[in-house]
Length: 113
Length: 114
Image (tube, rainbow over all chains, first blue to last red; front, side, top):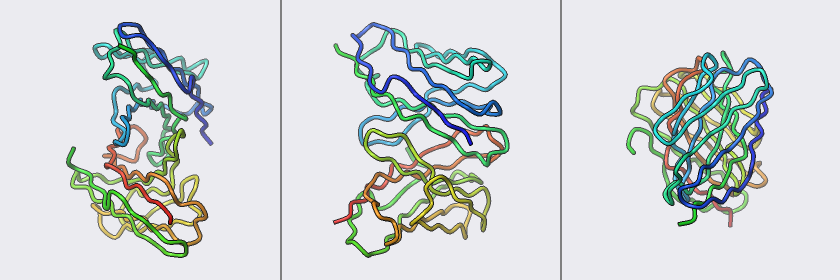
């Protein structure tokens, strides 16, 4: 089955710097890759997603890149702000997998003012 | 944050007791999911349901049971067979089970075994 590895587990940056979180997946049939942000004690919320027919997607300060050949995808946050501090999860989903998302272990991002 | 709700927010259980966590959605979603989250770890899938009266085991189904009698409801029972049930439980739903639908999460239930 699918396995998703996420790195780093913790990331600390200065406000205004960029942050990059990387994930690798094992199942080449996976075709949907969402990123969720979870603030302390709250529910995960989707911040951006990418499908396997594109290599990059951007939404304001957030971007995701996908390399299908290498089976890895990354989240890029530019001009980080303190409110970006949270745990970020990547996930992968395969076609006809019943909508099963396989999550990475999470990255705790801390943005220092 | 409406659309998918969970209750109770906090739940305390004595060892040997079964408890049921509620999950309701009014988004008309076909698929619903239960995840368990432990500190410092990702979300692990317990059970999921793509359609009413049907559900499948996820990666950590042992000690849990579910039912899907109505489209909008997907309760999770944590049985006494679950050896380490203290965790944060998240329910989710999505529009499609075809593999490319965003999952919307409920606010979660924090279960503690006394």
